Image (tube, rainbow, N blue to C red; front, side, top):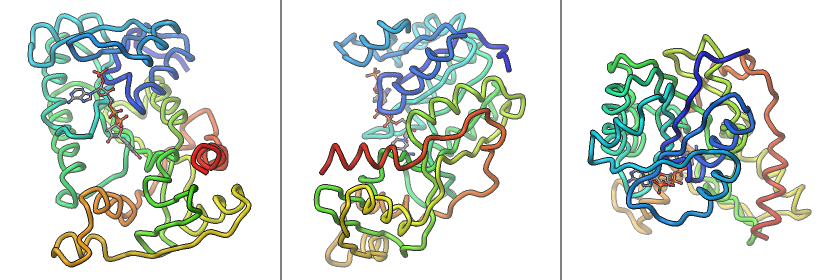
Length: 289
Ligand SMILES: NC(=O)c1ccc[n+]([C@@H]2O[C@H](COP(=O)([O-])OP(=O)(O)OC[C@H]3O[C@@H](n4cnc5c(N)ncnc54)[C@H](OP(=O)(O)O)[C@@H]3O)[C@@H](O)[C@H]2O)c1
């Protein structure tokens, strides 16, 4: 499969996921790869590493439209991997979309890379959905990628390897799609070569297991039985301010775990098999235990 695109600019390429997407494009070897960073220029180890592997690091002030347009000229595809933390992904991405259009960028991949949510469930996905609607109406080609939870974030949603304790924010039989960061990078690269990904939503998963099945893998890898706490009432307590009142972060975790999982995966349209989830679990256990 070959791509009609030559130059890709990855906004937020220094981030948790962005780094892996940049790396996947560099490994592919058929693109000019640019990493768009915010001004003012700051030292950044990941940016240095990516530059040493062949990426061009470019900078712009997102509040200066002309500057953004100028740096995006010559780019075929913008991939936004901007942060969801302490920022509104609608507001942070709109300047990028406006400038991409003006710079005649051909395709835009938004900072989604999560799970499919209905409107009104939580402000973070709501802002993503609002931006995606604007992107779809913009006339630019788009690909929206759903990959479920990052496998590297299994600890975030309750698998505590240090204390050998799992907190389930749903029944243990609840299934969850998860994908490793490196595979999300590979999926993203391949969408540019797939005709089906033009103006489409692409849904993939490296693994689809129940909370109990993920736990079993953690127990196997760590060689011990874990304590399990089931807490399905977090969202109710958060909404109704019932003691103990959960933190916004805990409410977000419960939202992620309890969300209905998407169906009709596109995995079979891709040329590779995702990594076994055990590889990431082994890494988490080694790191955290
Ligand atoms: N599925 C999952 O489990 C999961 C987990 C985490 C994240 N995600 C999703 O993945 C995407 C990327 O998240 P991430 O955690 O990888 O991001 P991140 O590491 O927090 O940030 C990515 C980059 O965005 C830039 N940035 C930070 N704040 C910004 C702002 N206010 N405006 C513009 N740029 C800003 C920074 O780059 P510079 O400083 O170089 O400009 C940063 O390195 C998001 O859509 C997020 O929701 C999914």
